[in-house]
Length: 375
Image (tube, rainbow, N blue to C red):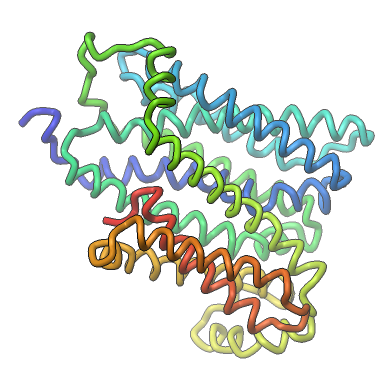
């Protein structure tokens, strides 16, 4: 059996998927909590927090990512091209993940500088880990059926990380810090860093690069960039993907503010109480007595659950009506639900949850065509 038709073991598929679980513990935390951490826990002004996230994020997107990708693609070692990057970055990424969510007692200017340095290093190390990790699936096997199988394992890992961070993490932070969110988030991030580092090391140990490009397939960075620029479908999908993920990041990062500063607590409590009572009756008493963190968690949980339903329907709809048509339709409808949030009253809790469920069902349904989870 050649490397191009290599059938992978469950051990290797699980091991590889743990890398995505580790990456998304970081990525989902950044999307959901970073802005809130900077302003409401660390104590930065909103303008400074926004400037840091925008400036460093832009540098990472257009600087770190292309550079890391180009270097990783030209790496040659006894472990292969991409696996060594997972090994080299595992521990540093864990350490900087903790430091980026720590609250040292500096003067205000020192806090700004500390945030810039730690966020920059975090995005650099994240790129150094996640970009080679993503490329690794292409050299593990050339068997497309096996690659699709790997994607299924990765999907489960991503959903697990997203569910944990968006549904359970805020109550855990409050519990771990005994109400002090600064202490709580440091404790939680320390545990996530340890777990994520172990997972990345397992990914390195359990995977193997089997496909080695032929020498004549090598190209210069200039040739690679020209090929991409000339590829109009790739450029279009790049723009759509960028806009989609900007939307997801803005939505994910704003919801915690939305619940803490806008949603009426009494109406929220009345709405979620029956849900919490039901969960309690089946032995789930996780959310505690804080209606804001409980409502925030249930709000995200509903979106994620219906997102999974949406992805499950995407293939049948695409087969019947065509990917492009389904993509455009769901993109348009999900945009309407996102706009709806701007017109909801603070007491319209039922409509908030309904809009969230509909948005995630539709947004992730069309987004599955972008990221490839339509199998």
